[in-house]
Length: 129
Image 1 (cartoon, one colour):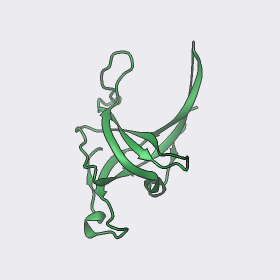
Image 2: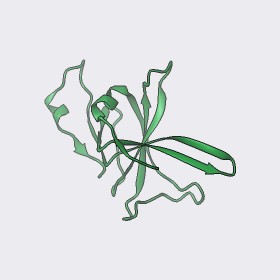
Image 3: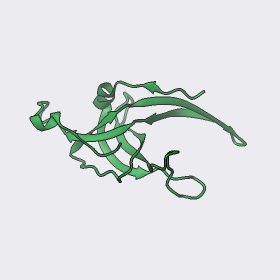
């Protein structure tokens, strides 16, 4: 059973320490970029997040976008329609499981300056839809 559970993106935002990169999602067998059933290319945002463990971890959020997303490391990601789903896979090597993060859209906004929001923080440009 694969069920998407909505996530409060404001809580998730507090965990993010840095955006590492935005990379295409590729097929394991042929290396080609995966696409949605409508032909929209898939990407993943790689993030450094603080999860309460001793050290930050890398987390990935999947999304689809017609244009190749660009990001500025000085800006913070905003995830629209953020969800998490549990998955399980059984094959000849055994069973593996985990969680998968995805969103409908990724935007970037200016990072707060000393915890104070500026007028520019209120606006965000969509980079993926």
